[in-house]
Image (cartoon, rainbow over all chains, first blue to last red; front, side):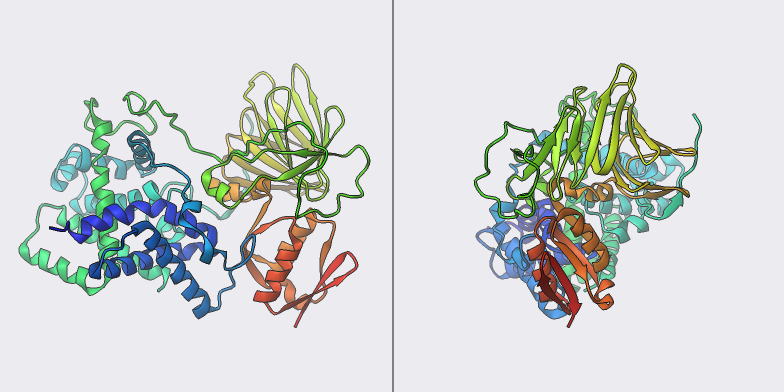
Length: 198
Length: 359
């Protein structure tokens, strides 16, 4: 029996997210649209795979993303300007953009820990108690003196941010960042320097 | 599809995920989830994506082994476990060019322009491929040819050149186009006089000898850190990507990583950015100019820093066109060609200038 489509999709498609995002960031000038293109590509690949699973899933994912971008250029008359010529993204080979070898299990753990460390202090505790210590949401709420609603909020934020941080480390859409009021690295406003004496 | 829509779907997906995880989950809930998933494949893939991240988060257990406390260890305090032999630190973009022996003439240099008339003591040096983070390497292609004129502790680059030098204390300086520095190392202080232009510094830690960049009557001071200083007459722009840097003019301003500061006569204006944005600001180190929603006027001014052949905006109508993109700093032709193909702009070559008009 064939394995479930969802399992296949996670392993063969979603696992390439970091490379995909790097590729998109390189060829697509509008950062805020990267997540849109990614999700649209996932949806198209999923729908195609419902009919028949592609032989080369990774190449198929990248081809789909390229077509989506080409569609957008045509539809919205976006001017895509890149070093070395426009429309370059139509011709990039998958192998050119993924020179790195499979990350080792240890590296993946380091990456996970690093992503986890970027969560806010409370969110970190909540995710830890639920995922590592396997307390129920109710128990987590009690242990930390939080309402269950708040625990849920932290878990939602935690799942979303871990998905981003572990895969597209550097490419968090601004809208998500501001939404989850994370730490201090999303301030891009001007402020006057304070003069300090030490 | 708008960004807002993607975010909304992701939010909804996270709500479903957490509700299913809550322990209170009925057949009716499951039916409603199925319904939501079936409504759009965009829903389904957003859900699968978060579910996968959530499944993977369980691997934090491997890191939790041996931690008796039920709360997580402090950030970065993971090295107690055997998993962290690999250095636990943020990966920065470190250009790692080494100057190799001078070669008489590079085999090919497609972007050549305006170096023919350099003084006779100009030496053309071949620089190895930059070893940088993979994401940047992708945008880069092959190595770059750089130029360096060297007279003792005195370094210069011509227009369009970028070069790295390692100082005697181990610190590394990357000089941008048309830049001149003088270096003085003493037992008490490491002094760099930025005569003109822009340079990026990777400072070797030495708490006994502060690293001081002076320019336009101001001093920029670091101990062990990474930052750049750009001089425009008396005004400075300082970009910090790692560690802390102090700017001394009339007063003192301490800059954290991810800041871009402008020091003029009126004081210091500090712009807080992410470290990544600050690094983007320094993309010139790999010969690439990055523009993010900037006017054509700004982009042209930036290009002209790198090329003897100047682009001139001959029609104010085109000045405020907004552009985005990554460009090779020394390839004026490609830039102009792309402008013509994508904007209502016409280019005319007039002597060693390129005039831009609207059409």
